[in-house]
Image (cartoon, rainbow over all chains, first blue to last red; front, side, top):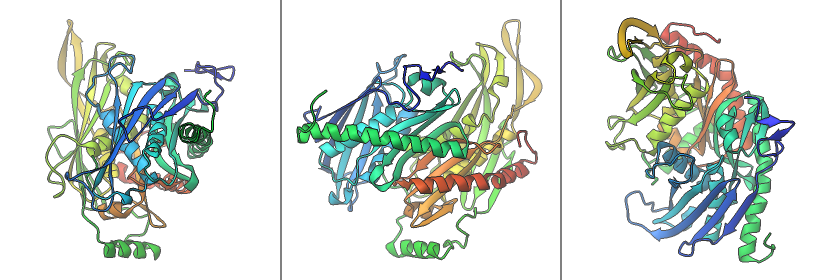
Length: 237
Length: 276
């Protein structure tokens, strides 16, 4: 391509390591046990957590809460209308998001229950699964689910031969690599890792390190958002 | 909905698996980084344009390639189309119900797809009959007949072997309509994708986990290398996390080991492919 970075600036004016504007709100859906809203770049995503609620259905565990996760894109969330039926992509993403959140949660305090995480992408931009994870972890904290750490995610990519953090839509579609990573920073742990594109092993390691640095910044935003609801510590900006 | 679809592993067995690993051996006698016996048989389905059976230990997967004719996607008028689908058949285990692909089968197909697509193993630009109008569609259908863990690698080897050995009838535009000719064309192969899956169990990293090992693992990491040793697809599997250092260790191991696996695939299809 060769037009995604010009004079060191990306298509939206950012430098390679800059994050897009990120705003998180907590307690956005009244009926939910926990909820959040995130704007990350042009992503606009609501998350509602319901439960843990008693469940007798097949698949319920006697040892812990079973988590169910739905990532869904609204029909108007994309350039071309998206069919409201869950696509194969959405089904896979629902699964990997569940796997990204589950390591952080202490679910054995709620045996024989079901914990629902509903993610609705009202507008999608690059990195919607990452933003969903960041928001869902906040909503789970808002629901009072005991957790080891907040989880946050960001996609690193390679555009015009350069590693860049937090891909926008254009970079996601036209770039050479898309590498979303979710972290539990307290434990130096990765809970989601996917990649497509081509990277050497050394580039891959560098990309994960860049993602980790970005995750530290995103975690601050998560804590600020929770702090605003629960402690009124941080002024609205 | 997460419903555990596997054998329940008793605490005693779990302890046994962990103890064995701490002594550097696995309960099936393998070294930590050894692969189970891998048997790849291409060309087992005469009616398919390409096919392969893969047995990885007791995991048994068949992949078939069929060729269709379609319209290209509007954003890639000069490229053919690749579609990968996977089904875990009810023959595979007592835990598998018949029905449309569930999230595990969809993930399986998408992970195999990404390895093949991102390694650019198929030269899709050579699958065009008339730019913007008619292209070949390559359907790779994966059927899991027997389940004993590591479906990602077994399915990838089956898909890759089926593609490497595929050939099909050429179509031509003649007087404005598409005509199927008798001329045969080999699948345009530009590279080979090599899949490797590692699992973290206790303090150990193992290669090619069995179903039982998947039941006790923290998480797994599946990666695909191109023939030049570049990573082209990755997927963390399982509902646990992986330490960053373990992820790095796994990709290092994969980089050291992928050529051996690639050789096994190429020997099975009897045909060294370009890019090596």
